[in-house]
Structures are given as structure tokens and as C-alpha cells.
Image 1 (tube, rainbow, N blue to C red):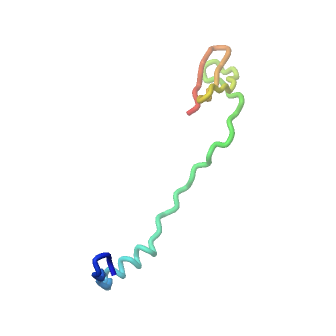
Image 2: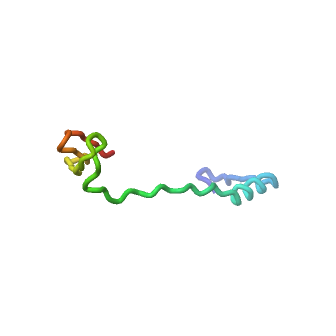
Image 3: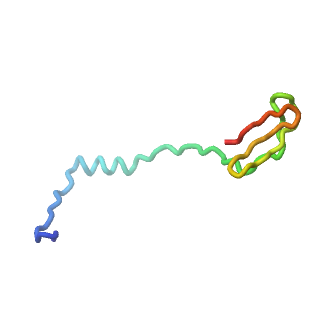
Length: 77
């Protein structure tokens, strides 16, 4: 019974509704391939400008690679 003393009546499901529900339960979404999560960064990478090694540096909230030879900065997102 509900709050006002009346019973809430729910009509029984019809045959087409049951078929749709059964079909929806059987259908599953195709599994999406998950990209691997990068778990570690290289300490040194090759500079795209001068081909020397760039070193990984960090500020409080940023990671970046910097090249001492040409002063190129590569920010990690």
C-alpha cells in the first residue's frame, strides 16, 4: 500500500514487451579494445630538433623534457 492507503497497480507485461526485454538481455555490446596505460616515462629521450638527449624534468604539477643544447621543451600531457 502506498502512503494514502491506495495500492499501486502495475499492469502485467505484454508478450511483445517480454520479447523485447529478452532480446535486450541477450544482446551485449562489443568489447572495446583498451589501450595500454603508460606506467613509466623514460628519463631521457632524443630531441627532435638537434638529436641530442633531452632529460625529464618536473615542476610541481608539470612534467617536461628539456634539451640543454637547443633549449627545446617538450611538455607531457
